Length: 138
Image 1 (cartoon, one colour):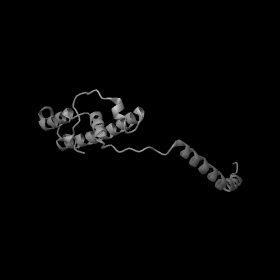
Image 2 (cartoon, helix red, strand yellow):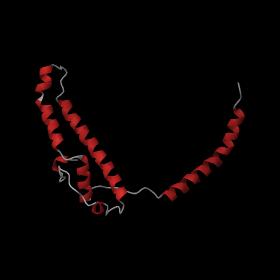
Image 3 (tube, one colour):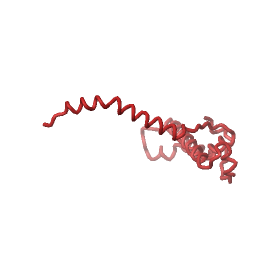
Image 4 (tube, one colour):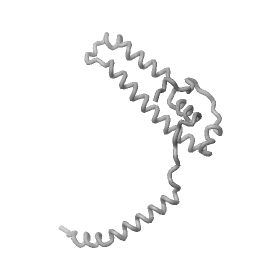
């Protein structure tokens, strides 16, 4: 993603939580979605920054080279001036660019889980009897 062209603010802005949570109808889901997206953005930005800094890495670490490596300093300053990952995530949510889905309801998952346990127990009942007879004490 190109974070240079984002419309996210670089400073803190008070947001209407009800406005943000219109899509999910749940403030906690919205915050969870935003935090996960902000983490993804932060990881992407960090990887990109480290790739660019590694381009300027030198094998000889003399004291003069450490202070004179202006390219690394400029790259770092550029990334420090970018909007924070949470601001970018909020802006993406406002623009409708964040995709999220709800997992299956818990009741369905519980039914599937109990059905799978019952099937495993039925299938394994014969094999456990056989395996128990094969085990001998030493």
